[in-house]
Amino acid sequence: MILHRTKAFLLGAAISLVGFSGQSLADDDGLRIWGAKVYDAFASKQRYPRRAVDDKLEGTVKIQVTVAKTGAIIGFGINRSSGHEVLDAEVLDLLGRVNPLPPLPEGKESYVFKIPLRFQMDETQTRMDASVTVDAASSNWKDWQRAVQRTLARNQGYPTQLIEEGIEGQVKVQVNVAADGTITAQSIAQSSGSDILDDEALDLMRRISFPALPEAQQSIAITIPLNYRLDGRRG
Image (tube, rainbow, N blue to C red; front, top):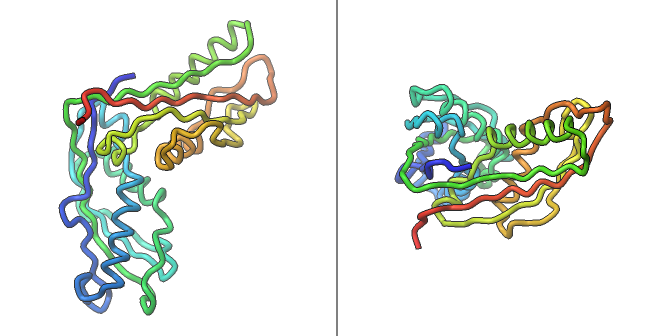
């Protein structure tokens, strides 16, 4: 599967942090270090929604987040929409992936920060595919394999940080699938060599479910190779 290569940026000095007391990030070394960790957490978990890529949608979502002392996100909202529901929804999903954030510096009970997230495409290409093989001759199983591959094709995403860094790889994920298609367990059978790519593969398996198993099968364990390739990347 080939997609236009995509980028999702945290804009410029992306994190704007303002505490309830009005103290700025620049006034506190502890907050500045914490803010850099928060930035890294968001950057490592960003991905471009497949539907937005297909429809060539771009835009900026401005969000405000409140965190507790532990780093747990206790409040959030969209201050300005991108104008596209799919991009706004992806940002809310992103908040779930980064929660909890790093604990606040000592002496801070809660904090508020704002981040503008920009989704922008370019014209190089991202290539993703997955192989699904089941040891069964029945046409029912072949139909199931094709349906699983369609599910993966709709949902597989490429972490934007790795697109920017030119990192490729293959992750082999082992999954246990229940009779109704629910994925009940997932683990890395073979690492890509990138923690971010491995985490993305596991997160994919947590977010999706497969079609119900054919022939009254109660469960199945399969290993799925997920490939991530970049064409025309910067050398």
